[in-house]
Length: 441
Picture 1 (tube, rainbow, N blue to C red):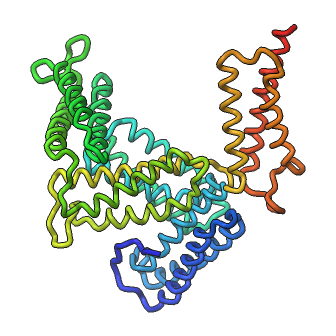
Picture 2 (cartoon, rainbow, N blue to C red):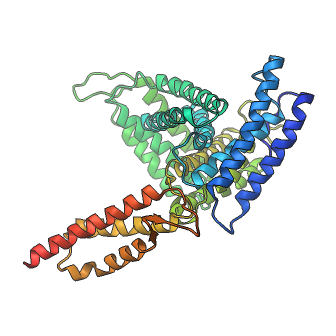
Picture 3 (cartoon, rainbow, N blue to C red):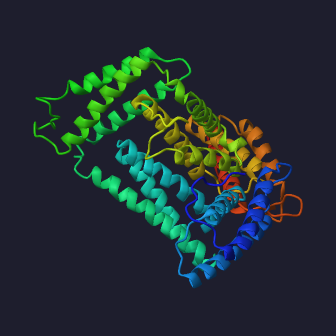
């Protein structure tokens, strides 16, 4: 188990017993995470959550007496590990819409916003997604006011507010961008990211990068006297933003074509590490429904955090203190940002269903997609064609006991989501059958 790397202050002797107990709790959470022999049960997670909160309350009491409510030391880092794990456990057991589940997302979205600010290029769509996610997180925290610890809720509110502050700063930087230039700006952001992605492929795709450069020349060719014009030949606002981004794209494409994907050897180990994490997360994003246990993301988060926090004033440095050149710096930052983006995507697409019910839920989702596709393609010519779907639906329905899906004697979280999906599949099937019978008659 690895702490978050930053430790800022020595430990108060009165906090030492709390640190010991929190370390023990983190070990328990880690062991629970590693146990793949059975699914995670809600009561196990809630028990550990309550024990962690008990230690937080004790810590707040001690720091309140000493007038150090904002102290940051190793204990806070270990508590961060605990809350990060608990948050992912809440997603794993299907309690996505409860306050503790928000914690992990606040960490990831903060990293992403910091990286967008550092890279200094992003689209309005990036910011809209972040804003929408923060709104949902805020609603989740508000709903938890009667259920969860005030200390946790205050912590989450502060973390969300920090993210909103960075987001507002990023939004302000695009405030002058005219809607007329927004499509051009978004296309340039996409091209710049595509060049960065090509730069990290195992075999450098020269033709692809040259193709992106041709697209840049095409965009440049639409300018008149160095300006982008609207259809009525007026000059929309945001020229500096778009023209500056176009120049950056040309510069980056030149550097990438010159280096052809070869990173400075001094940073090859870091590059290989980040590339492997990015590739693993990419594979997970393709097979998420069938292979992801949300707690598996913890190790990726912590590996990325260690790399991110090892930078000095934002610079990647080798063991001798040598700073990375622009190519290495931007390449490593891209891999770091892309990896966090995959984690963000995996978190927001996590279903509010316990992993114990996921096999059934995934089967129903597949069945629903098939039925929707049949409906979209014109339906069936006879009710007989629906037999395979009906048999599968009935077999899943027969798994229920008194309307609930049981695993042993347990009733896992997510019953509402699975039952709603089952009902939707039945509705589509009935609709198709009625249509086929009407055609026959």
